[in-house]
Length: 101
Image 1 (spheres, rainbow, N blue to C red):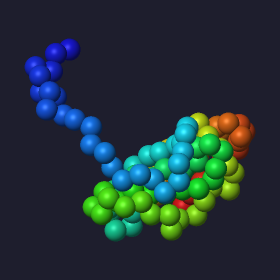
Image 2 (tube, rainbow, N blue to C red):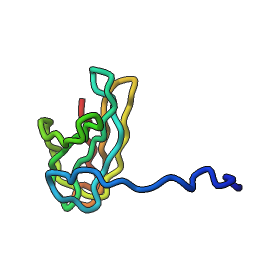
Image 3 (cartoon, helix red, strand yellow):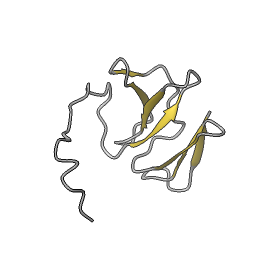
Image 4 (cartoon, rainbow, N blue to C red):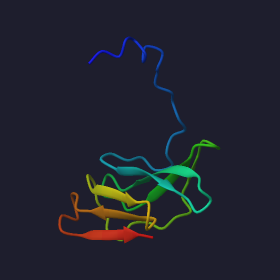
């Protein structure tokens, strides 16, 4: 399907580096209680740390709880109605599921 060149002006922009280097991390967009949308990223390289990217400030926040189980390549789902993040499986946690709320 042709887009008639409507995306020709799009380009990649560099954002601030994460506080923790990661490979095979899991990520999703979530809504904070304030209504602000942020990027939630966790795990990767079998570490259990989590970070949030605040798009307004461009800063990564680490003031959130780590995963209970270190993992990489995990499935992730954000339930916006219950405001919970589900993280399941992945290398290092093949049969484990946890919920962040």
